[in-house]
Structures are given as C-alpha cells and as structure tokens.
Length: 369
Length: 125
Image (cartoon, rainbow over all chains, first blue to last red; front, top):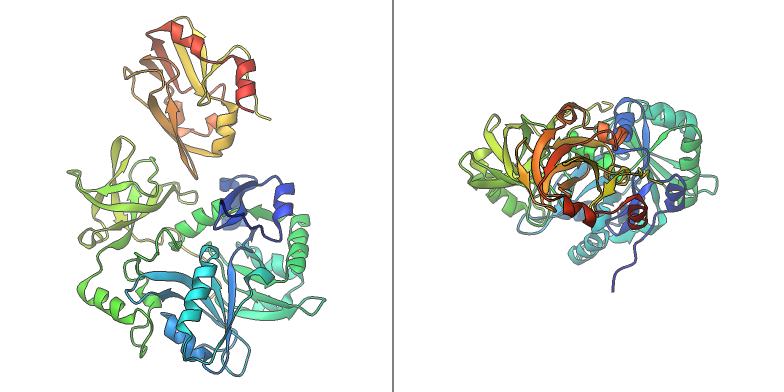
C-alpha cells in the first residue's frame, strides 16, 4: 500500500498561492510559486520565505545529555554556550552518514539540546538515537509534528523579521546563534540565524498556528514565497550538501569534504575509528566541484569520465547555476582525480563535455558574522 | 490553461509541427514549456542529421529537469534555430514562435498520425 503523503501546517496556503506541489521526503511540498529563477534571485538580492515545516525537531535533555549528544554526533558540543548552534553528522560505526543536523544548545543550566534533522530521516534518526541511548540518562523527545518552521532568507531578511514579525531581538543574533520568544498563547518560538541558502537569514520554529500567522504577515507585506526548487539551487551554489545526494549511509563526511565538522580529537563518538582510518588511508571517493566549459547541464547520476571514456565518478547534484550563469556540479570521484584544476569529462546524453575541478563553494556566501 | 494554436499538428510528447510544403517546422507546445518551467538550455542537433519519427533529436533543460525532444516525423534536418543557444528562454516566452528545427520529411503520410488542435486539447487535459 502506498504511504499517505504528510502535509505541513501551511499546505492549504501553498495551494491557494498556486504553488506547483510535489512529494518530497514523504510530504506534499511546494516546489515553486512564481518560478525557480525568480525565487532564487529574490533570496540572493532581496528576501524570500520558505516553508520548511517538514524538518524534524528532536529534543535531548537529562543528566547525560551532553555526553550522549557528543557520543552520537561528530562535532564537539562541550564548548557550546547557551544559545549557540553547531553543525555536524550522526554516523554509523563504519563512517557512513545517518544524517546531517544542527544542534542547538538550549538556555538551560544543565546542558540540553534541540537537534534539527532532515525530514526524510526523522523516524530513522529517532530510532537510531533511542538505540544508542542505552546506559545514558537522557530524555529523547521527538516534537517534529508539533512544530512548524519557516526560513526567511536573503540580504533583507533581518528587516523583514524585525518589521513584519516584531522580533526586535534578532538584530543581535550572529550567524549560528538563536533566541527564544513566546507567542500570545505562551508557546515557545525559536528564532535562529541559520539557513540553507548561502545568504544571511533566519529560521523560526513555532506552533503551527503562529507559523501560519507569520507566513500570512510576510505574504501580506509582499515577501516572496520560495519553494524547494530554489532551496536546492541556492544551497548547491553555496557548496552545502544535501543528505541523499552528497551524504548517505555510503558517503561519509570525509568523502564529502566535511572533516572540519568531525572532531577526531574528541575521546570518542560513533564512527570515529572509521573516519580516522579514512583520513589516514584516503577515502574511497572524494566529493568535488566541477565547472563545465559548455552550457549543457550535468544531472545527478551522469557519469564522470577521463578523456578516454574511463568512468571515474558520478554527478551527485548539477545545475546551470542561476547566480553564476555557468554549468556546475558536485561529483563523487576517485580520489586521484580530486585535485583542483584536474580536467574531467561529463557524459550528458550522447556527448561528453569537458570540465575542470573547482572549489565546491561556487558562490561567495554572505553570512552575518 | 495552456494555449493551443489552430492549424498546427501535435505529437503525444507535446511537440508541434507546422507543415510548409515538404518541410516540417518543429517546436514544443505551451503546455510543454509550462511543465518545464524556466528553460535554460536547448540541446540542438546539427543540420543534415537524420531522425526517424519518434526518435530523440535533442533535449530541453530547465533548472530542475531535462526533457527529451522527439521528432514527430522522419526526415533530415535542414535548419536549426541557433538563436536558442543564447536565448533558450524564447521557448517559454513564445513557444509557437520559437521553432527548434526544420525537417525535410521523408514520408508525408506520417503527418496523419499526429493530432490536430482539437484532439491535442483533449489529450493534454
């Protein structure tokens, strides 16, 4: 039997706006409203708002919360001050990736955390965390169904959040920090200076009713609604991985070039030995950026070849970049072909197109330091 | 509601054909361009390439997806709209003006397998 698609608390408003809807991670989500190019440019130059209510929110508290999160998470949460956020992964013992996530250090005396995980992985992550929790005094609380989430992104995001949502405190937030507020009912509202676009911006987590109000205020003020289509083009240009494409049970953070988020000097975490071995011996594959000389578009799954046609890798995400007007892609390739400047060829339909290995951060990000 | 032009013939894969003597002028319908969204690249064939009816002669690429172009009739390419190399968005703006290729038909009887405007309107519903 086909599983019923879930919907977010803003679903009817997307349909009303005429969004093109499509299944994503088990949810019926808006892919675009006015068009991917228009929405992409709004976020780069002005401001746009995304419904990201499908993301998962899992709270971890209890006496051993810090030790537990540090056990399942690649980055080190011990130095985190209350109100700060850190990015990293949960790994399997073999170094494969369970998920990539944000960890929010709550405003509690005893360390407790909010873990924000990918929609497609909520159930898997929660089960995984419960399995790993044996012997730890922790309380795991999956609140994903009780939170809506919107992301307001772009150079004018701060003004939009302050003026339209009446959240003056957010001006003080620096990148990867958050603050707490309350709605009229006394429900918690979390505002973080985070995003997935390469621009300055905020993500707001709150009860569905207040998320609907906020969305409506932003619409009334003319903030452009943005779909998952441009969320992908934006994050890709900014060099950010997507779980399922650039990270997976088969793709470790070392392969994906995300070692800086894996603290091998921590006493232990799940997957540490495997990562250390990959770093010492070199990973089986490496993720690279490739820029093509032609406008043909490399898509996920297309083969990456040497000039003689030998396949040495595969494209994981590719677009004709909207901000840079160039055809670029991420590809997983044999490590000896990962050096910057290496010539590689991409097989697109019946022809091959020459490209060059470049830095994965194709677009210069504009975060609030 | 997508626009359908009278007097053209249509394929099930949403190409249109304008018959000009023995030459078929080929583009994609308004329905097809709307489904694709912003078109960013057109993979064009070369002049003198030969295609059988139903064979892929190129592709349209939008931001999100690529879509094969299928030749509605058999024949030899006699002209390619190279303006589309620099301005692929012309297909979004004017799908019935932005022709893609012209094919010298090898078998005019294949035209009878295509749909007229009324039949295409039903099919594209």
